[in-house]
Length: 506
Image (cartoon, rainbow, N blue to C red; front, top):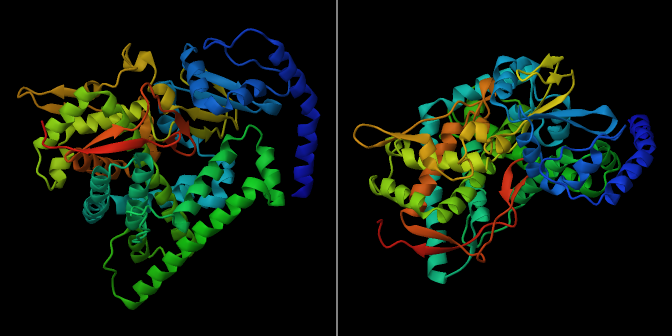
């Protein structure tokens, strides 16, 4: 291992003169960069200078590049000839995620980056291991009893914690960070659904909990590995156990130790009972005979990761957008008013306008703005882009939501009606888009198992919140939030709000 690290270090330092030469040349240029200029490429270091200089706004930079490419596809050159293909072309996305699925797995690089945290969990597995976990998980997700359990958990968290917290903010005239509140809400929910464990993050005191904090650190620092322009950097730090890698190791240890403790307790409970009263995902796996500790720990951590930030990110941006578009909020309130105070499943399912508003929000601000695969063999994408074996191919839902050729000249507008049509009676009905045009929940064999569960949770939160409260951003006039991405997306700096009691639904 040491020889390998040393060899890579020597190669890296040999390229440094070229890097500095390019950097000096770039810094002497007086011409400002424009959206139409594609990255410059140099021998050995590729487009490292542009990659480094755009690291803080990487997503917008990649989007500008793709919008300026005829087929919305671009090959980015990294150090030492490493290539990464970015695409916002629906035909390419279908090719990668469905028709040539077997040629585009997660890949060894992605798995190695996240292995310390996710192990062999479903979101970090390929091949037969993935097929097995997908089959087992799919069976459990398709049961009516799990859906009912999710409804019960979400309603309890909503009525017993979220609504009282918002009501308290009205009475105390306090400012809340809605992003933090929604993350706590989602974390409580997914832990109860996945583990049958309540971390109690959304208590009135907004407590700091070791498990939640460790999970946040593990998520953030693992994603920083993936975003690093030079992977050698984090590998060296991990080898010597210093800096961010030392902090990551501690966080992962806390997450996995706690998760294994829960697994052992569930096993003991199962051993003393003929069946478990709980219907959480962990109990279901153990009851079905999948009792290997590492397997169950890996898969439950993956589910927590999937359910923790995705729904909270989607809802954060949703509440921002409806405040900016009161005409949309008015239509949402009209739909809520037509339903009962205690929503049943069919009523939630029938909320077409809210469903469309959430889809439109995620079009502009997808919880997972990019996703990458690695080519197993040479290939050619439908638009003619040549893919060499080992190349990383990244499709970008964030960029796709901003493509005029997909969404029209009004793509910048927040417009739920683009997802709707009225029937003869004047009632809205939802009209979805194919998953390759709108790959927010992935597509093909890896399409998100928890999609319906996510919509169930989000629609209940929207109805339960807006029925009673008006969410008002506590920001200065002209404030524009910044979209940032780690493993999932966030609003930089949080979302400060004030809450007003809604007298009646107009």
